[in-house]
Image (spheres, one colour):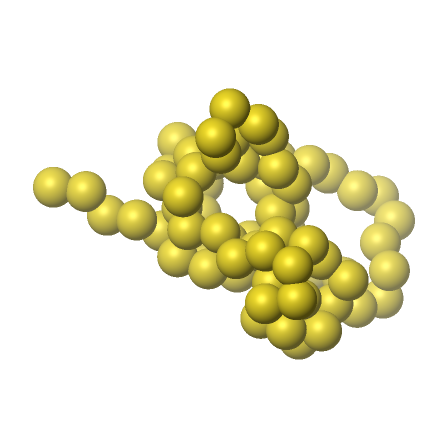
Length: 74
């Protein structure tokens, strides 16, 4: 679980990453760049998938982290 703190912009991407949004997520005191699969935004608390699970969740794109859920709090 982490918090979205920013975004990464790329002018050129691999074909399989076209249209993909990348966000910076702070998790455990470190920052990770993750592919956004749910439309998260700055300040959102999110659930991350990493490694092979993230790649498969992103249709086998070459990513190591993916945002798979926005965590709601009461």
